[in-house]
Amino acid sequence: MDKFFIKLKHLFSDKGLRNKILFVLGALIVFRLLAGIPIPGVNQSVLDNFLNNNQFFGLLSMFSGGGLSTLSIVMLGVSPYITASIIMQLSTMMSPRMKAMISEEGDVGRRKFSFYSRALTVPLAVIEGFGFLALLQKEGIVGSLGGFALITNVAIILGGSMVLMWVGELVSEFGIGNGVSLIIFAGIVAKIPQAFGQLQYIYTDASQIPLFAVMFVIGLAAILGVVYMTEAERPVPVTYAKQVRGGKIYGGSSTYLPFRLNQAGVIPIIFALSILLLPQMLFNMLAYTGNQMVADTSKVLASLMQNPWIYSGLYFILVFFFTYFYTAVTFDPKTISENLQKSGAFIPGVRPGEPTTEHLAKMVGRLTLVGALFLGLIAVLPPVLQAITSIKILTIGGTSLLIVVQVVIDLIKKVDAQLAMREY
Image 1 (tube, one colour):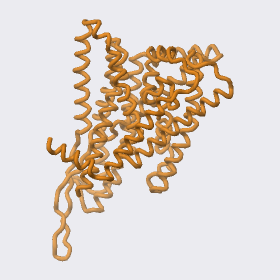
Image 2 (cartoon, rainbow, N blue to C red):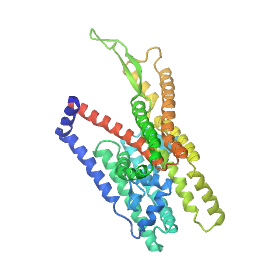
Image 3 (cartoon, one colour):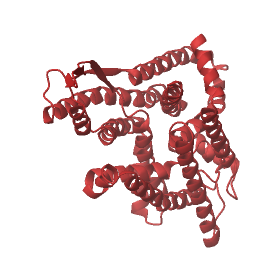
Image 4 (spheres, rainbow, N blue to C red):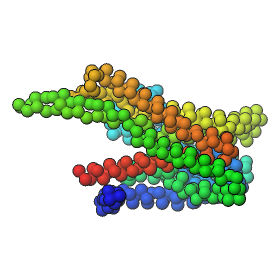
């Protein structure tokens, strides 16, 4: 406990760190203010009824930080930016030129890559905004919009998404933690009172209390499991060869490389949900087109996506894939092998060079398999429980819980790293 208060004291006594924290808090306050500004012509009662009966828009509301519940100017949240980032990351695996832009061109290449991601966000936000407004008009949530009014509302939604993207990047650059993850985290936390309000019928139906007690235990076990698996690591022993310089012997020490079981963190969950939202939005939009065949097909596909078992299967596959994908993008065993060789270090029992690269790649592959399976199972546990118990709030609550736990853990680590850096 004393150590905690000492860290807390350092946290607020250091001007640079204090300014970073205040910047993050200020940015999140701006985000919440934007989430409370609605677009014109919203029928709130129809909107509330629509959101309560649609799982897909409940997930979209989570990404918008609750902005969808009032049809705010940031109703799309960071979803277009995340989708653009996924497309750009995938392009690095298919295009050698895009991969070289990040790995070989340094800061200039990374700035170009970020610019392309931002530019791609614009058309995606326009498409999603237009499709979403078309659906809202059909449901009677928004009044009939003429050409100019429709263009104006799409422009407002586009502007809100771009401002939110900008705020997220500012948080990543001048604050602490990942800005996009923190925005989603802030939106989830802001909806906690509403989630508790949905449990009011427990008090009127005593037969539901044992069921929710079991759900509480499962949720607590999931939190402990996520924390344990996030912190779990495999130490890889490393030995530095002895070197003689000027009559003195250097090296000969042993240390280890910590390889985490889940190196991707919360990113696979965010990526998977973002990809799941796109086809559902498209099917819901096409369900109201004039072509009867297209409309009927879209309605069937939209209803299939609402099936909790199909949804859970797709969710698991996407989380599993993006865990491997993000680990492959961020972890390069060849670079680590080269750095070890340059510093005169080696892994006992493994020859330097290509054998070390293969050994590290194989080890990370096995670790990622365990992490991906666990993350996928935890992600699909709430929708599976929903299918069994018919409690709708479990799907949204479980996904939110997973994101909140991982974001908090990541934030604590980065704050500790900042404190340790200042102590040294």
